[in-house]
Amino acid sequence: MTQNHDSWGECARDANISTANMHIALVSRGNDAELGAYRDARKQGIQPASTKMHDVIAATRASDKLGRAVQA
Image 1: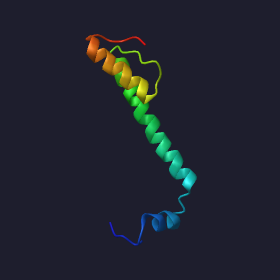
Image 2 (image 1 turned 60 degrees about the horizontal axis):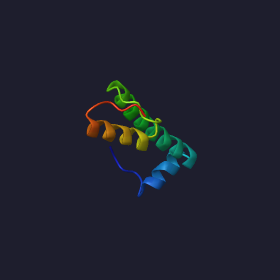
Image 3 (image 1 turned 180 degrees about the horizontal axis):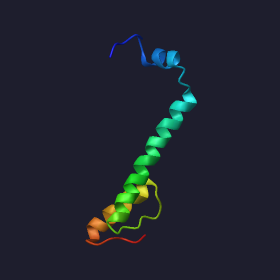
């Protein structure tokens, strides 16, 4: 791969990547990670309070401490 630009910003500008599109991509990746962690917890029988990462982590830690799946 050759580098034709001095910075990532120049490359994005030439590729016509908008800030909104970059934001959407980043949010989508974050949501995918949260939903993946939630899905993994559910496969273990854990029921987090929500699909948010902090709730999934809390439920997983509580399950580890109790030695059984937590139903939040």
